[in-house]
Length: 315
Image (cartoon, rainbow, N blue to C red; front, side, top):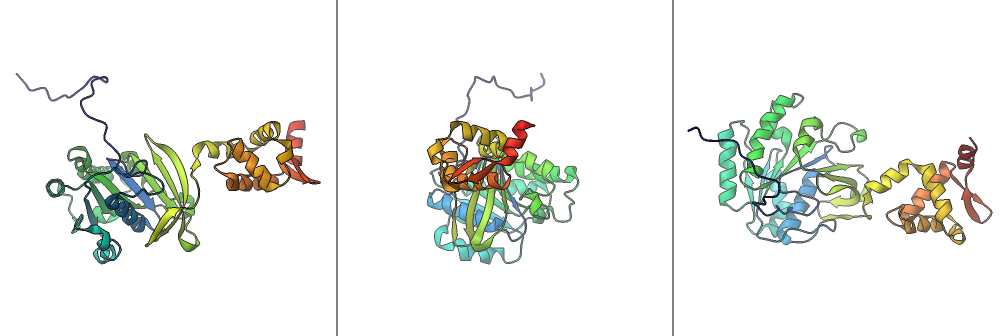
């Protein structure tokens, strides 16, 4: 009788415990993709992720899965080992292993890598970066990307080792950190981290998107020796309300405390109180934008409906 190779399980048959995230809401137990333009700090952020994981300290207020963690790192750029030693050696304590880059698509080599990491107790594998792994393989062809995905997939699916892949973003800030060749690439990942809006003093925007944790956007400070969140996350709900500014202003004027509509700061506090902004400071910025749009205006010592809002209502 021929062996049945088709595997299945009923949805209510729980054969395994849920797989915990490496860092909750930031690094999933499968494939996490970190993308951004060159020199935007992808390797730096990956280093801080590793540091938080090994030290058990939260990152962006996201809790680390406590346990005995070890990290494997494979880099492709010149001088990458020296750079990592400078940044991470003091906290490594023999918990970080550096693998020479594999420049072959021979699946037996990648299987051997996975076996070696499993034997060493590795819980997170960092690949820096995808284009080094691809070599001369053109990633414009989805079939070529599938070859790379098939090499990485067994690491997290069969060996249970989380994979963090670094990749270049498309040209220009308009890409908002989204990986080039992103349809196939982002479709494979279960969590997306996008770095963009590089500013002074390490300022960056980090967008996080995942299948099970939703979407959020953080303004962060990112330097080789410092990382942190500059503001409370902007939730997707806030973005949606911003796109519907006239309706939001009408609701604000209907539900606000009239005594608080004295200046842009007090309007910002009202927007926060009513749940339209992440905090009072963000609410003030939102209120000022409504003023620029003509939806609100100053009249005497009060903030009232602007001419654009009145015109739209008359129309």
